[in-house]
Image (cartoon, rainbow, N blue to C red; front, side, top):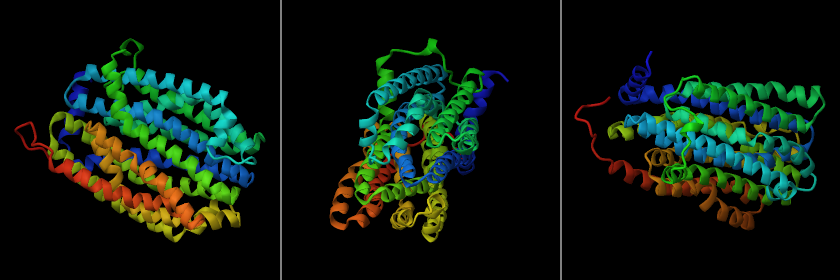
Length: 457
């Protein structure tokens, strides 16, 4: 099949297929990717938890660093992806390739810089991430391997997001799921079979990221995508680079603030000992796993939004938002109820320590309650970002883990102690929901009429 025919087929699919089946079709692979990726993070937590409580706390420390890598990866990946989907919707394939190539190489170089700085300042970095003296040796052994794989990790996020925004979620899923399965298999072999301990978990994670990178870059080099990755198409066009970074800024802020909030949460929790740090680390992994359902559907929605916004078919943007919101609310609601009912057992699966369970269980209940509000918060942000509304998308992305979370954490900890720490995220969720609703309502109401004189389904 010629490239022109493949492009027309994909264009027709993204702009004419009924939106609800289309969002589900694109959302299922991304949801599977998110669930499996979070599953292997949880497997790390489970296996490391078999060592001792301090080792379990180290997972939360390393997770905060990985969030930094994700922040840059998502900035370049979702920034490029949003632009690419709108360019493809406007039938500008050449510009899409230039955007993909530029974003990929900048992301890879950024990963190298982050890794070098991490190695130079490794001990201060680990303490900044919220480590205690007893957690530091474990975190250091784990983190070294994560930093070695950093360039590949950051650029993998670019490749994954560009594939998603092209509407090729199944190819994106293949790369991420393959890496995740490798990690799940390698964890027990390296940690216990070869007796490498927590270093084995770090090696396993690094290997999985290299595998994912190799599979995803192959998709671009083998002609399975519309946009291409080529050093020849890398551009020093400053306006394009600024457009990529500006469009991806909401993702950077969201992920960076997630890292900052995790650091601050660890710092507040460590007042109550390693068990508290471990408990909050486990809660974060569990809620991220549940949240992956809504996030996966939202990521299936993003290319539909960007493609149709670029094509000027604004009615489909509205329909896609509504369908995705309803689906995400139902699915997240079911998962949240299960989490509320089985909080104690869920914490115990990862660390059968009474102190860890006692600290983590109330926090998990609070966060599961807040999950009901997340579809509106996440979709509002994704809609604005996918349609190029840089400033408003950036503002909304800063709410949940930054503008509302950080002051709430210190205030709640001062007023209510441990309970305040456990409930902070839910307070931030309520405030974020209240702010997001008027923003997205204004956006949807003021979308113009379709540019084409035909009715789309």
